[in-house]
Amino acid sequence: MKKENSISRRSFLKNSALVGAAGMIGTGGAASVLTSCGGGEKGGANKPLKEPGSYYVPELTDVAIDGQELKAGVIGCGGRGSGAAFNFLNAAKGVTIVALGDTFQDKVDGLAKKLKDEKNIDIPEDKRFVGLDAYKQVIDSGVDVIIDATPPFFRSSHFQYAVEKGKHAFLEKPICVDPAGYRTIMAASKQAAAKGLCVVTGTQRHHQRSYVESYKKVMEGLIGEITGGIVYWNQNMLWYRERQAGWSDCEWMIRDWVNWKWLSGDHIVEQHVHNIDVFTWFSGLKPVKAVGFGSRQRRLTGDQYDNFSVDITMENGIHVQSMCRQIDGCTNNVSEFIQGTKGSWNSATMEIKDLAGNVIWKYDGEAEKANFKQTDPYTLEHVNWITHIRSKKPIMQSEETAVSNMIAIMGRESAYTGTESTWEAMTASPLDYTPKDLNLGKMDMSSFVVPVPGKPIDKK
Image (cartoon, rainbow, N blue to C red; front, side, top):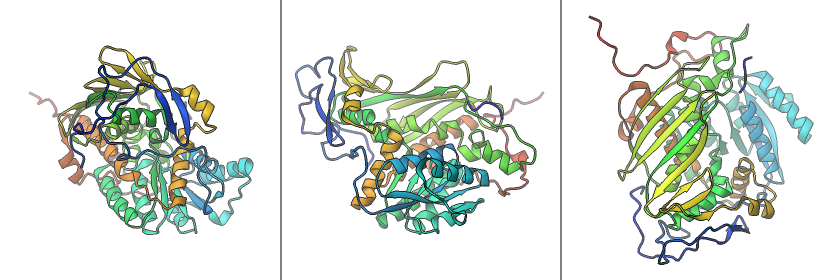
């Protein structure tokens, strides 16, 4: 092994609200002092983008409310699945894990051992399921909820089956890798809503108090109307796995899934979706079109790119620039910047500045640590999920996450082809990344090639 290294333009509302640049802000049931470095808009009033109470704010308590006991099944027992399993167990009392499923036996047994060693939870052999259809066996094993952390390609079909069986679902992001998966997610989400199910996705910034408080401030009008932004996920190369003796074609790809576009969606979808999602969350806008480019320069396995740059045009005409890269030895930046008519918000510092560059609001992380025991957003997303289930208040994050996913897919396909990608065309596209001969044995590897944009140069 190598290194493991509707949604329309926001308009100002008629009713204005006086917004202080600092104050005691309730976050999840306790007050935290948020630092101010100056006043708000000169003259006083900020017009809110949305009226208080008209937008969703999660109740981020340290643990979920008490209530019915919940039995979970984990589908995908690798690193993220194992992490999500423990996030779930740490999020509430009266919850447990009773079934595990993965493509590979060693992954299932590894998580079973970890659960026994650290939580004294025994997963019997007849509740450990292996293979490409293990998800069905987990869902049918008597669980109340499922935690799906498989390679992203599989999540849309897993979610569809879970909804058919009436199970609440936690879906790691991304939740689809192609338009076919997007449509599956959207249809299943509507069915889940009709059944009163609770679905939370792994876009953990929605459950990170600094982001939630920033979102509230933007909704209160502190930066004015949103006019554009830039979102980044630039970091070193992720892990990869060289092929081992005895591994079939499919086994190698699934074990090395983060490097194959059919399994991960490429890193603009698998990872950078977080940052794109922040902009769509704060702005409430859908895209119209995307034009991007990218390339493969350093990646050692798989068939995907290692950098993308995409210009996204939103439905009201504003632009957001998307940039992501996974290459060692380059400048790193994982953050979001949103510009407004009165100021800007930067997640790198969790500050809002006015147009003169003065800090008028800053999130107080020390106050959060003083007021809360649980500050991990990966656990808080499970806190919120369980609270919704127990209070019988449906939540459906899969739809908004699917929109963010589709923006990333639009950017990826534009970069792959060199052509403009539109929301209308892409959401209706027949594009489906499912391999024609998907099985755990030998596959036609000639179909997994690195995309080359544009037309070839004519030979003379």
